[in-house]
Length: 489
Image (tube, rainbow, N blue to C red; front, side, top):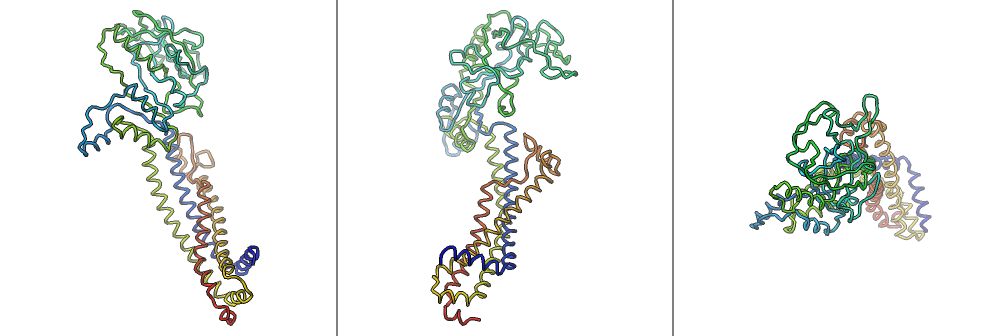
């Protein structure tokens, strides 16, 4: 008997008892559908949580802070190990972090205080926004993208800066007491005015801060007055030239929410330290800075490797720094989601277990009804393995058919859940759309998600259930005596 004969006989037997086959298959359909839908809800919940976290920042980013990691310190204390003073979070530590496996980039984030030095254009316009010292070479690896210009070379780090897209609007006209700032947003007529300065046209300087220049009065556009440190442009000290190398992109696809691409100016961290030392020297201030950083950002090549890198930074004596990443939140959320998926999947699996019993019952009844047929097949010289294969094939076909129909119905149920309870057809108007939109950073998401691996797993499991259920009846069929089977009515 060839494989084609076995397939033909299998399909003929199933069709001959089509009502029984249909009812047995329906049990597999219910079980498969229940599993797929339940697991898809868990997958949708996981996607919602990840979308929420991505809205808060980059999942591959680790923020490192000076001082021992609390959990590591407590663990060592319990073991009787005295750690002593924590290692400095300095240039050498950053270089060691760069050498760790899976680290894509690492850089200090050194915020410049307004009283240290001032970015200015001519003797009139002064920058009132944030300036951050960063490792310029690490910026592309951290995910920054340029809308204009280029990344500076190492020889240009002394004078080069990378600016956010709206930083030009943060310059104050120090010779005006009112309306001395231009808004980056449209006015009542929908017009966005040009800022006081132009990055490509004007010349810019960085002046060392002068603590005595602190009495100028500034009025911001909404009438709010300010009088404080460095409100005016310091003229006591010399000016260091500044060249704008590039403007950061604010394209939604390019923005990394962990970094400011609009309102921050970035300067190489080594240049920031040089200017800070000059500030301390000129103003005769005791320099308490030992060259360490308060904060270092580490970008990992893949989300799956974040925990490994974070443990290397926090759980080793060479580092031992405290660190934070959104992935730690993600892992706790995933554990919760996986627990829910297991519970839901287990409940749905009960339906498939009932379906398995139905398949076994169908195959046993089929053997009783076809005992004489089995005897004739043996008398005609049919191999025992062929008889077993036919019965297993019938059970497997019931599982496959039920799995295919179950997956198809699951897609329909998933679509209905997403339309009526979730995203409301894409506009967030569903009954639960507002809730899920609040979870996601990029608008409405799907409550139920059926990934390809779930489809493949459901079909494979349904077929496996059919084969396992049919294995014992198939073995029983081949053990029937040919002579007794022929006598059977």
